Image (cartoon, rainbow, N blue to C red; front, side, top):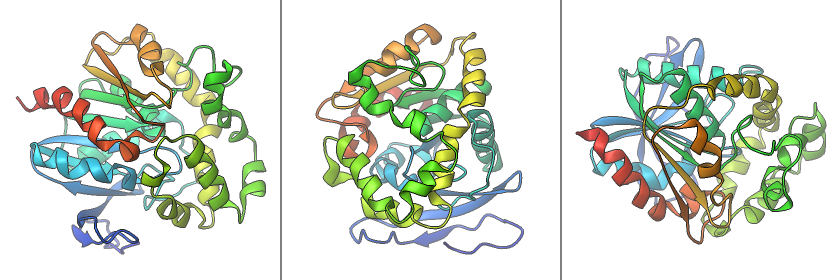
Length: 307
């Protein structure tokens, strides 16, 4: 991790990414958000767009989206959520209400009162919460490859058909107190390799070693399980959020080897302006597995925000 000034003054840094010599350098920086040190990567100039990655990943999952979006006139901010990557790993605050508050505060801290959000997996949960909790700030939102707690029907926390339960069994396992940490200590790589291989169509495109290096550190597994242990609060929040459909344009994306059309089915009754698509030859980790297809849908959806 790169050091910053003790007063958290923003400091733009050029940092090469370990284990990927072919990847261009990005501007890395940290911001103080209500006492939380948030790490983000920035590129481009123009309309701000926030990229939020998913469980067991970091901003690095968005690496192939950043420069193409920047080249099309966006100021791209790819952030690590609390407990993720190089953002602080506190012991609490993993309900999506708090996570959304963190990210909205980050964008405000950077000077953006209005912006778009693209969220994958856990980032999808947070993207939905941001759109619902800060509708005057979120102009457009893309929700990609996941089931949002409290909105999935039938409830993934209790039961799902076999085809979909293959993607949601961890909703119950990850909530167990201390058990995942006990079982996974020293086995982080094997666990992550199992998940990435079974939930993807193109596992060769996923930066397994990058994520293993991050979450094999002390406390890494616990922070990732905390997103799930906050389900009671998140579900209660989402039940209330769903009472008021989202008014801004929403794009839902699923992979044909992932959750397929679940985003459309899940979001259709709680949005007023929904577009959706299923990505071909793509598993759960869409931003890494199929960034080209993701961009084919992102760009025409987001570019109207530039006008």
